[in-house]
Image (cartoon, rainbow, N blue to C red; front, side):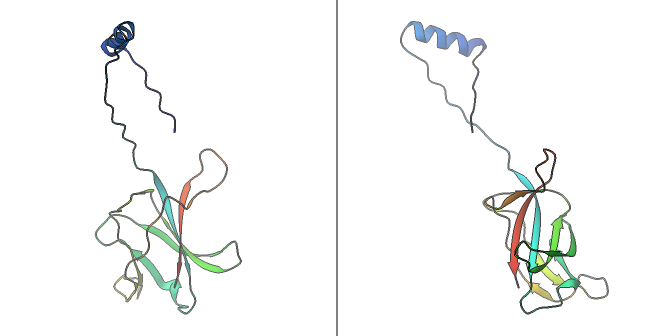
Amino acid sequence: AIVDIFLSGTIKNEVVEGIKEFELPLYEYKIHFGARSTFWKYLLISKYNSNLKNTIINSGGSEVKFKGPSEVKMRNGADALEFVSETPLTLKEKPDYRFQLKSVKAGAANGKTIMDKLPLASAEVIRPESRNEDSKIFSEIIVYI
């Protein structure tokens, strides 16, 4: 990244005077960047459990919701089920999220827990939906079950 710092007002005058006197004043800066947010895309690949079509991602007490599951083909030709977050979620070193994969019975999410703690998105796997400037940005999380 490139950060431009423009001096103005009192600081600019102090720096100019310091240059003239060969003694520059020292300033300390802190730069804060907001956390990046992406849509999280879970791709579930089932080796043994063929009943993943009747599942949901449970976000516990948080307001995070996922669309899906929908059937998709992976680039390598494998079949997968896809869940996509309805809103962008922040990427953090220590995320506040905890997601479970649960089976659904009669439309209620009180079924059996298939996976107690789904892996969380990483900043290393970020993919744009397309090359358009306004396309959605996704974090893909591939889970083998």
